[in-house]
Length: 104
Image (tube, rainbow, N blue to C red; front, side, top):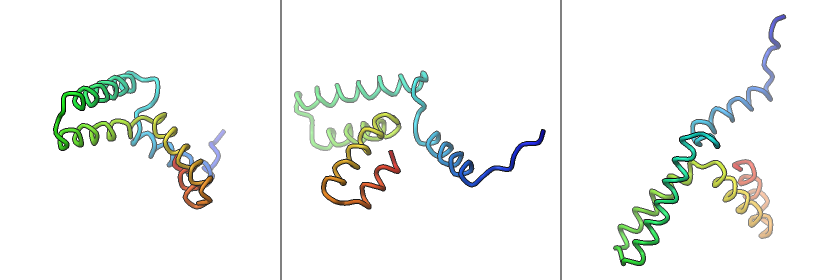
């Protein structure tokens, strides 16, 4: 038996999977759990820093690092983009809602 030629739908799906695997850390893997631990530590550091009165620049630096780490978490990105899509729909911004749904 010879393999069937790839369809455009299959090629699109494979491209999408390839793109997402290069952006996100796969859930359930050791690197993913390490990422979640690092995110938790950064959130705790940010909270402790605020209580200690760190400078605005230091707070912004920690927030930026936290955002970069959260952007690698597929579950976090899904929650954020799904919520943004719902908010855009409520405001009547259909094009924006569609874009957020595609991203999630």
